Length: 300
Image (cartoon, rainbow, N blue to C red; front, side, top):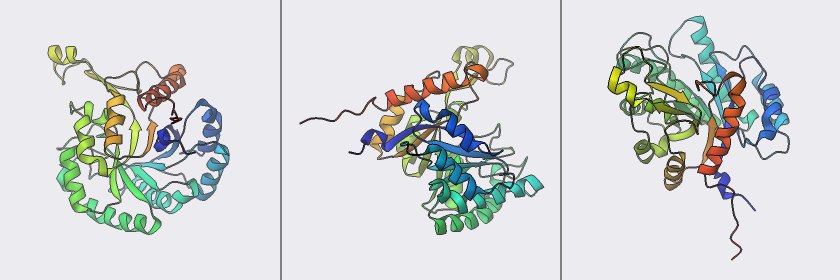
């Protein structure tokens, strides 16, 4: 019998930039993760992705674990050598996603650096219209992470898909059904946006979810504001931040959403370094509990 609880899977991200994704999957596959998102930072470093995909699936073996999404994070709109490697990486991930069993590639839109967000729209349309056709031909969805990378509407280096006003703009430029979001509450909370209503409005455009949270230090904001020397918000591993993940997953279910929530670690100010996997496994169990716990078959 299939497990309806796993219509939403809880997993984690694994770095693939230097070729060790399959080894990492083998190391942590028994910890209870139900999915993995192998991801690249700016470049695939010339790896044979078909071979990497096979090694990742071999590392999973006969476990009930999936790879739904690959990550390719960089700036494919600009034209430095590294930016062009990012663009090529997107093409390679789209072309080879099926070797991982994945049907989605996620990352940043890119951005014309140090310019207002709207100045990026013509180049966005040029690049992503082409990549959209490539993805459609391969049966692959494209999901933009909602991370500002310290940018805003006036300026930035990496991504324009970080704000619901920007989502309206980019989806108008590329109205394709298979272009959407890799959403997480954290990247909205760090700009004091309430994330829950976004699910109700944007669920049809959410293709993948990152498990990352935030702690907003309202006492700091009230005393120092958001531009003072005191840090007013921390990115957190789920279970240690402000989000009610029971509500988040309930809203996703009410919207008919299914897919993977893959934990994005390495940001928590406490559960990092030697405590990294302690925090990630806590988050894994926290999110499983928020999903409803163990699936119980009604004997009636």
